[in-house]
Image 1 (cartoon, one colour):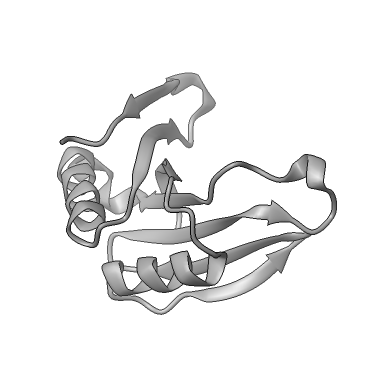
Image 2 (cartoon, rainbow, N blue to C red):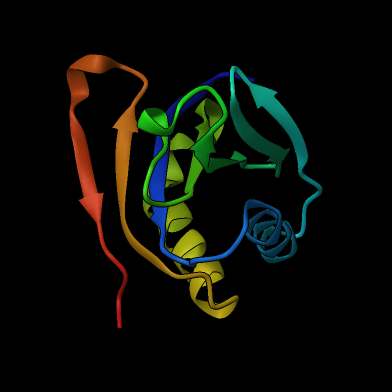
Length: 123
């Protein structure tokens, strides 16, 4: 399925990739399949509205390629795009309810000309 935008969220839970993957799978009520994508582990699953991708902070190819945090990418399907604000609130609510810590998210358009927009957790 084609996507319109991606919400990329920096996760701050200092836990293993396996643990964060289990937490995300439970929170979104989906099964995640883990694959090694050129040295980086990805766990991928789908809902009716979007694809969920958990990206490991470690890279097997080099320590220089590692990140400080795991990342959660939400690829919003093109048919659902008009409900972006509702989806954003839904995703924030899921993260909060399931006690998944994050520091910021960035909406990135599939169209490179549309720029980006940052979001932050609400207390």
